[in-house]
Amino acid sequence: MANIELDNRGLQPPEPMVRILSALSELDDDAELVALMDRDPLLLYPELERRGYAATLRPEQDWFVLTIRKIEAQ
Image (cartoon, rainbow, N blue to C red; front, top):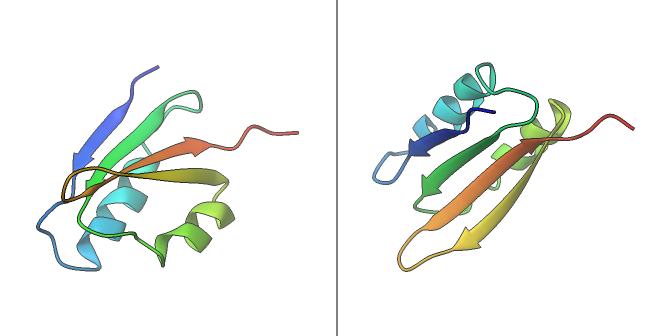
């Protein structure tokens, strides 16, 4: 399991979303993608769901930590 970490702070939209969607192709099914974000990426969630991923957002001091995982097949 190799997690992927991205620091998307300071990037202007749509660059954070583009970087995350690109990195998903390298993400193992049992791994997580963790991205540091300046804002809640509202437009990203529907695309993640369409691709079979779920995300959680946790606020930190002046940024957010977005964690993305593959949804397990039922």
